[in-house]
Image 1 (cartoon, one colour):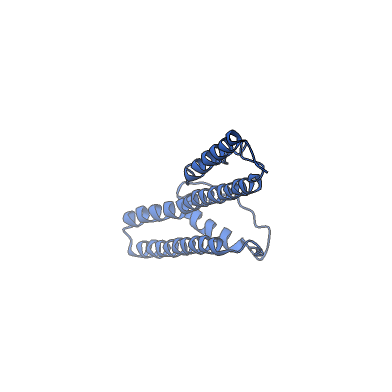
Image 2 (cartoon, rainbow, N blue to C red):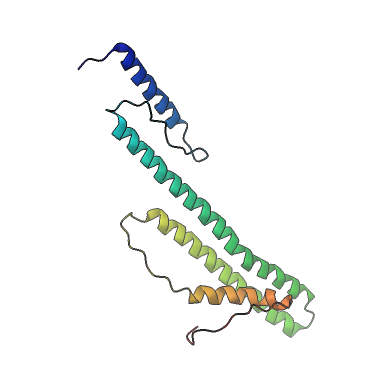
Length: 170
């Protein structure tokens, strides 16, 4: 089946334009290819490229959300550490000073643990196969840790966190 040379030229021009668009895709510019003028014979392949681009965008968006969430989650223990350091500087009584130093160490250990967990989560997510099952997470320990980090800050600022115990196991 021969086609007109002008039609062939237009088809190749359309493919060349789609190829140039594909070469310009990077983290900052992820957009589907304009395949409106791609020949019908190549359309399934072009559609699969656009599906791949869409999956890439979902992954990039997920990474951005993860980074933003991780940064947000780390602000609280860092604020507790800063407050603890300020309190330690102002503690002249050796017993009070020793207690505040112990609290600081606990916050530092919890913060390091949170960072380790975030890194493990990122690694696990990167290695996860598409057909992997999702495990149920018990958030009680996470809530305990966050409350332990927030209580000194809330107490220092006379803030009632307003939490209510709903489970005896908590």
